[in-house]
Image (cartoon, rainbow, N blue to C red; front, side, top):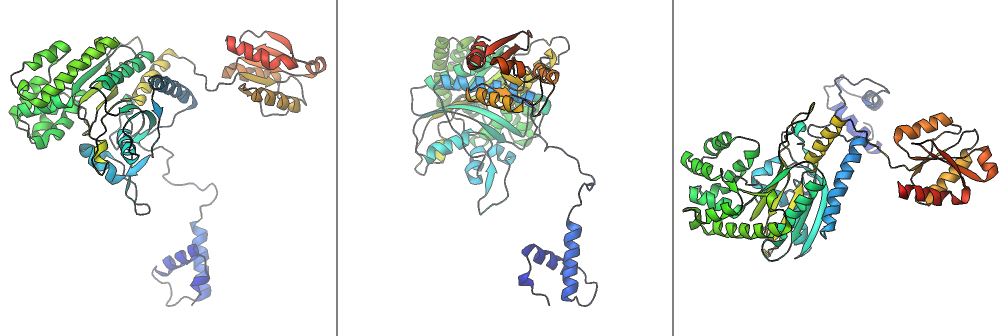
Length: 506
């Protein structure tokens, strides 16, 4: 028998797998055993350039690669959004891409089946984060923070059926702003809506409307319509689908799948037709059914105060009180809101864009307490910008306009018209880099000048510095404008200052 302990572990495992197969002979000698192992190892190694049958190179469903052109557009959108968050005093935060599964499942309830669970690693059951809100609440509780204004940009994962043509993915980016802490009613909520307006206006996506409601009004409506309290969250999740489904289909789901009585669903249907402004709030204060519900009255009172602040911010005309708005997440406790783009007639050659909501959020006063051992509350309110959907809209409009996107920020190209000037180019480009100037050169010893100039034109580099024998003798560098093709000789010691001056003027 061979001395198995002396063999490498991989060989040991392969040997056992060979021995467990139906034997070709009654016994196998040590030499024969080793030859079998060697044969198995050799046959298991893929040969160079060996074709793999039925192998297709692809990305997982609901994901995508972003090209350099797409990344330029995406970064501009994110820069604009984050600069708005910072303007309002938010601090940056990052949290892990995955959390303990038990930390997430209780918070999403109806949506927990859409989470991506990871294989058990080291005794911990983990799941990819579903949003950025629950990790933020966990962070507040874990660090015993009572007050914070934060923003976060990061990827989240949901195991939904992707609709790529509408900017819906299984892996997507969220861009969140949240205010945590005990403050006077509706002041932070109003600022969140102001931020939403600033972002959507700044991105120039077209006309938009922000729908607002209050979870206490929704729950009060359910109560007076006859929905059992045990079904509140389930019926709320169905109602949240009204932006994707007709009321008829939503009603069918409530009755056939959620077990709601048809007459109760019909009463809900009467309320969700209502939308308006302060006048609707006043009207609902007098509603014979809602006016008898304490929760609903509290929600209506806060909404009335909210509209006062929105008027002072100058954005009330962008806000609509809409009783059909529910927001599906189970952790919302107060004001909720959702921004949608208003459909405009498609221009010639354009397809109408239907991407659903482009921003949403609300108040969640009890989420942090679910992580705190003593149940201490930290009221929170926040918003999330739908970056993927916004990016989809901008991308489609750029395709229709045939606008060329520059993928680099290079400001200066270092060129030469002659051979054997690599060392001079390397010294010159190092000087530019050290001065903070974004510069490039071709990775060739003796590139042709025409090739270098064509590269600048194709990539949109605005300036070229040219060094050759004549320039070296005279102690100057030629500075060329790519657009106008004008060239001027600049003294070597003045080159950096001249480039910086031109860049500041452009």
